[in-house]
Amino acid sequence: MKIVAKSIEVVSWTDTKGNINPVRFKITNEDESNSVVRIDKVICVDKEKLAGNNMLAYKCQSVINGAEKLYEIKYELDTCRWILFKI
Image (cartoon, rainbow, N blue to C red; front, side, top):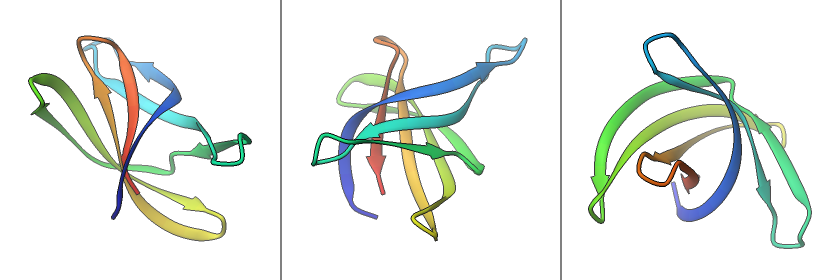
């Protein structure tokens, strides 16, 4: 997987315990077009600290352009921002 670290827009839902479950995300491509990726499976969720910021790291799997891909998205707890970290 290659590190890209791009900001993304995410649709998610939260259960009664406060766990965040991402559903899909939108990313802006290099040609300024937008792509929507549906998250087929969340493999695991880990808490981590990156550059002093507490984050939730989601390892996910989706079919992108006809191929099954693994990637990692991160949710920054202090600023409530989502990042496509690795793909």
